[in-house]
Image (tube, rainbow, N blue to C red; front, side, top):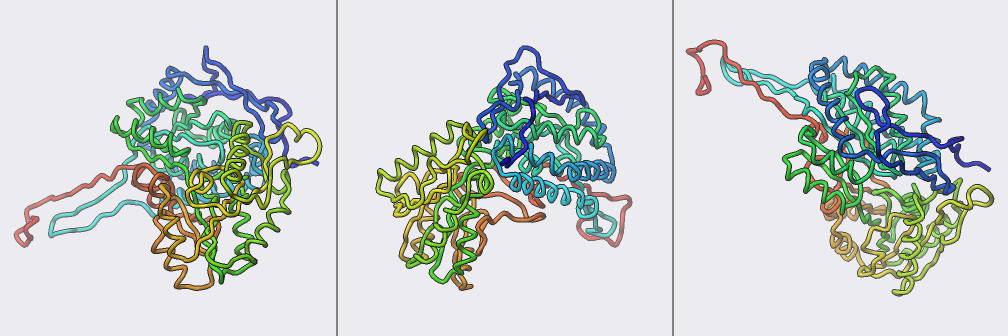
Length: 494
């Protein structure tokens, strides 16, 4: 049984520079490994500093023409891109799943979220036209948004379509030229997005794709013509990207990792809660910053915990849950489970050794849903981001104790409360020090135009990456004050 359509032969990735697909000279090629099989499905160039500079120069040359293009014309091209993307949903879903290890349904959901951000960008022609008013007699003030110029997005492996699509539609629509540096683990989808943007008619240099690893990232962050950098990845790297970019006077928004807590009260709806908890910690095989990794069980919630275990145990690797991105990550997760068990946690559901039956899945990187009960707040499993389908259950006596554990985390991405009591829900909404809160929602991702972003070690920089709050990141506000004649009836401003 096939869960995903893998490329028939390895795909050779190229950089998109100045509207042309180019293979950088004299650079090594890295293999793209499918988490489903452990086999090679592509090859990607590890672009050097010189290759990055070439892309930045092409983007810089395109800035004046794209900046001068009226907003409605830029929007028309983005609408064409949206239409092309929608027509290719099935193909792109399989492509993204094959390289990221997602189920095809999860990959499709990521693309649909990208279309939602695209819809928000298309609305800017009507919603964000600037503003003007007569502030005094004979005096008018006006504001307008100005694009920054060349901007870059550095994106992770876990959402090869969605995270780039958090940035691309808005950054381009407001008039920037955008350079995408996707994770070298998932370059295939990035190339497909670039092909559709070229087909949509974007002028040469307005959108670029540069593949590579650390050297490419450092070159983008350091290049003086890159005005802003959006980054999504681990907190350790996010901190470095923010520090390096900010020190060079760039605008940087770097989203990092998370340790999201689901607080479950005794009065929570059993069916709704158990489904939401399982979906949250197993979705995308736990490889997403919004995944639940700790359940704070308040008081007696044994009936809910049993339903969670039952639901999770029925999930099958392959059709029900995807694969872990690479062998090193799988080994790290298996080690973390063993470490928690040694520290006193009980493995009440063990996903080690679970995998789909038959070939070619035997060579893939698989871990089934895993539940650790009796985890203490000071254990590694309760504190460190594991980034896999592992849920640590920490038992607490009261809601206050749950919030104390939640707020002790250095991360501040998301938290959820499961209850049927409005006062309990409101206490968590007000008391949790996170950027996103869910009430009976396991994955509290805001929908556009509400923006995505955390706090603490989950975000370095200001603003958010999507929605209304992103506009201040991708643009400058220019304010204009006008006076055409002297007025005798004016105020102090005249």
